[in-house]
Image (cartoon, rainbow, N blue to C red):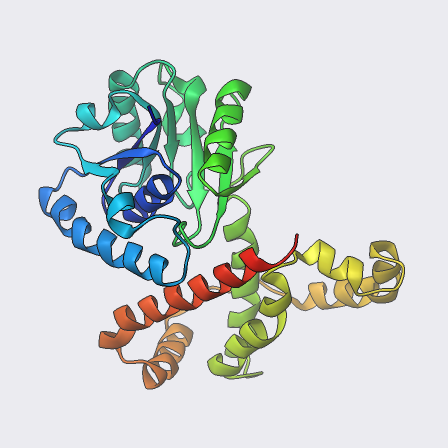
Length: 310
């Protein structure tokens, strides 16, 4: 008998998580407090699974995978018998506290409770709960069935056993879990992404380049290497004798550049200018279609990476 995962919230991220676990052979119960959201996700799940099948990214027929994902009539039904719960509801501390208090009452004592929150530390919504030792953040990258990283960010009181079990489940689900050794707002990915966005906004705001060319810097430059190597491996390979050699050659320049890099206020005027440039490239009513194009490009990249030797 396969293990059961409960997915709470049937929006974009919830649907994606359902695919991640069902594709790996888990039974999935998906629940949403809004019945219409639960109904709407069924067709979208089939479309996503069909796209994955076309790229060879699922080993079974879409209908077989979809059959493992079953809507739950209530939160209690969804959580019953689950080894792990993946929460994907509104991104506010108040809502997180409410749903985790409810789940902590309903779930079996050994069920791991995780949140997909992008920013909120586990301690913000778990501190006063009786079962706080089995609660942690498991932050994905959108969509998690294509981008495997998941950031495991426990609170100081989350048990090592719960973290280890979560790490094992996500690994078996085909994800690439990383562990935060201590809490920090935004976790790892969003802090690094935020640093890049901050500098891109500064360069744009101060007239150094267009938004289109700044996008090219990543997609045709840094992003190509970073899609299969991280920044530390990149610099390790960019000097004959490795990281120390690289630092001795270029560290002083990075230090000087860092002194000129200031915070960005994300002001409305700048954002409106970038919005105008983007809308010239892509109309608002084309965003959904382009998002599906993005996902299919990601599928092609994932398929390519799977064929490469480690």
